[in-house]
Length: 71
Image (tube, rainbow, N blue to C red; front, side):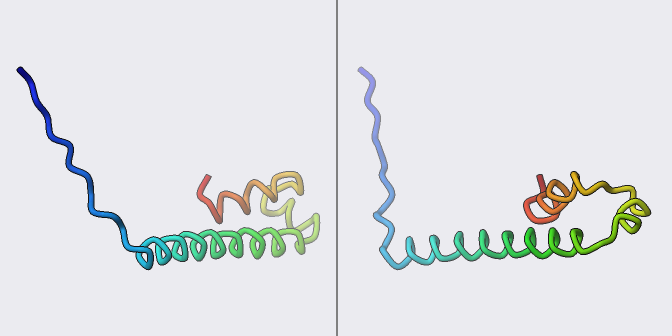
């Protein structure tokens, strides 16, 4: 006969869960700020500056996304 035991973790206190949510939100907000700042700075460049960098206006969102989220 086979038997098994299930070990459940102790419940996580409310404040620990709350601090985890806070950390997650802070991280997301920081990444969003990097995205918006990068996008705004790239959009402020002239077409000539973008061409010198080998970029097109269509690529700016993707570049900002990669800078912020690493995707």
